[in-house]
Image 1 (cartoon, helix red, strand yellow):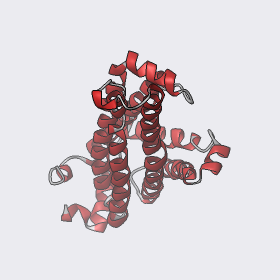
Image 2: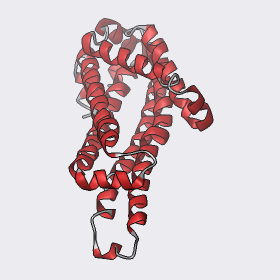
Image 3: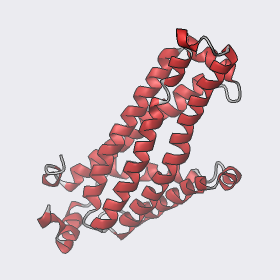
Length: 243
């Protein structure tokens, strides 16, 4: 895959990146917002357990959506790495590393969505637990899933956004304003490193993320990149010849 990507037009690669960005966002929305929003009653383990028992298929759908989101994000990471190599290969590789580490955490968290189905499945070996304890365990696994995605992953993703924003700003083939917006998005996500600050700023700390990511995704989908300037920057750094 890495060998074939350089043969493709940079504009096509950019539009494919926009497409996978869209798929990633849509799958994340299904898994972490739509599904969990219907099942989880915050602070009420018993009600959440009853929702899971009544709509277990939704939890499986959420797991599938999370895995699709991770898979699409990996493809997006590869495409972004190749797109931004002409700007700074080392920095582009560093950005990819941080994103992949975050995705590994998110992937592990995704499997936690299946744990409540096991806990509430009524297996013989679970008879030693009280019903209230099983409900609490199921709720805990959902909390851990949310923490993996919305805390740990988002911190690594924040670093990724800052680095990608810088690469866009230093590039000649994408608008600098998009780079500034992506860097601001990353800084907003990094407030999650300190929960009291994130809680105090919420939801304003996440607003730049919506603006920055949406602007980049739409630009890639509709416009792509300036192919001539990309090739000029690649020639200037020697990346195109090494590819």
